[in-house]
Length: 208
Image (cartoon, rainbow, N blue to C red; front, side, top):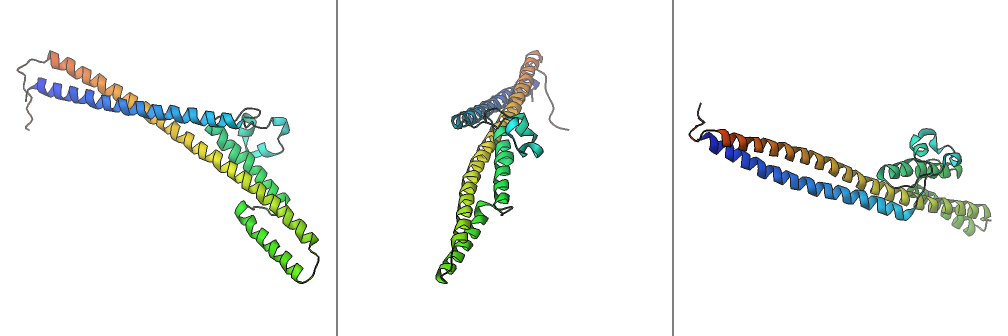
């Protein structure tokens, strides 16, 4: 096979493959930009603001990010993760502990709620006073409602955080594609230069 034919084949193939990788990189970059813009716009509509340092009451002890973001708007995936896992989770756990149900969640409080309801019904059937049990049920109902709202918001924030991570990964993949495409095109152009400089009658042996 003539060397010029081989150079031309590899060069053209490299340019085509490099072009495909470039297109893939542009698509990934577009998705990354969309994710970043979408996340910021959605958080901007919520207007969630981190509590100022002076108003934190122990939340920051194991969460430096609450100090780092104190007083700022929640407008990124990283901030969403911090707010969900450190601020909301802290207050949900504290509320459950203060109510006497340490470690409770929305799901587990449901069992407590049903249990107290059954006790109230049994007391009524026996003609007993249910005032204390009614107060306990009211407290548990309030706690469960708080748990529901807090865990729902926490889940939504973490979902958006996950979405932002996909955007970050897409940006990284796009950068790799751009570098790969640039390298292939440089090598392909070098191959075309070699094609021009190679004598037309030069032959490359493919046999050993």
